[in-house]
Amino acid sequence: MDVVIGVDTGTTATKGVAAGIDGAVRASASVHYPLSVPGSGRAELDPVRLRDAAVEALIDVAKQCHANGDRVVAVSLSAFLHGLVPMDRDGRPLGPLVTWADGRAAAQSERFAADGLSRKLQARTGTPVHPMAPLAKLAWWREHDPATLRDTPRWGGVKEIVLAGLADAPFLVDLSVASGTGLYDIHARRWDPEALDLAGVRAAQLGEVVPTTERLRLDSGVASAAGLPADLPLIIGAADGPLANLGVGATPDGVAAVSLGTSGALRTMVDAPVADAAGRLFCYALTEDRWAIGGAVNNAGSVVRWAGQSFTGGAGQPGAEGEDADERDAALLAEAASAPPGSGGLLCLPYLLGERAPWWRSGLRGAYLGLRREHGRPHLVRAAVEGVCQQLALVRDSFDAEGHPVTAVRATGGAVASSLWVGVLAATLNLPVSVAESPEGTGLGACLLGLHALGELPDLDDAARLVDVAAPTVPDPADAALYARLRPLVEDSVQAIAGVLTELDRLAPEPLPDTEKAVTNR
Image (cartoon, rainbow, N blue to C red):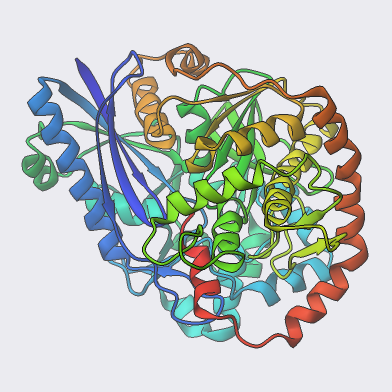
């Protein structure tokens, strides 16, 4: 079979996936690496290791393809958004890659909001003004190290670093990644002058923006090591979020994709870039005429993992020393399923790591409201799951407000192995939720975009019939009605106590190491 290899660079691992025109995954590999947390609020990666991992994953999958008798016809790239790294003119990194999880630019983001700039910038760039965004990161550099900011020849992210290792190409970045920087005007299709001025960089320090279907040529040395043709096309590809929609077949109108792992996201596709009037949604490109709108939440499976560490212990209990962490999570979720929907009147604001959508407030902190003596561990854990799903439902409500209603959801990620997660998600969204059969959503999306760039998949909506999903979980009407009644209480609670939570955060000591490390798995 003719296959495309997708190379998907993530926060803690790079995955290689090979798939053909039928959408079936033929080979896969993962290369892991650590995320460094050198100080409070910081989260960095070694860019050289990131680049090497992409090469290793590609070579591993290529060898599997050769063994299968499959012919590799292209390589296509996926990268996580919001990374930032200084580079020399030849693409060599000059420092660590600052990831999406790094929060040191909180003060700069807050200042933009206080000056009334956030909503205007988001309307033009599609990226919320938040410490995750390269705009805010560069503004931090401008204040703390202006000489380095000015004198660094190139500023890029994950895609630029990987591309410099896989292709002999000019300094390029794809439209999808550019649309997630907070520096690019998605309507005028140019680097935004005001954003550049606030960031303190020049357009010449940033890559030339090209379509996500741009065809380059794989580096000859990498091609030789992988046993691939010297002239093999390398498709520059897109960002991980929009590609995840493609990889689960959530590209037709009215279909949304949910990613539920350590963090989470809900996205749906539109035909042109849109500005969210309320400032709750991002807008990132998949191609020049397909765009993903949605919101990401910082806290998803990480909340259950935290609960396992905080609410359990003792011999034979979930969380006991030596048990596998995933098994502990599964046991805890099974216990939580015994609590009733609504968790006996307990509401959880699950903001252990601040929050992105729909609030985009990095300093927001969590809370339990309505605690009574009869509440036990099952109620506490179920309330946390419900709190995460309510955040995603608030994103879905924003789709409705912007005239993009959703009628079905396709889900992927480690958390969807739990029937409790899927059932609560379906009821909270009040939509049928189908779980993707393959766990390789983003990598498969990169393969499918590569096939599209080669002309083998002209209509991206055909991915919906290529990607297998399980029978949908249909929401329970009574549960859906209950969660709909509770959701306004989430918004009211955030508005009422946000100031209290922020002040408590200011009074708290430095985060404990385990709390800080919890952000490292996306």
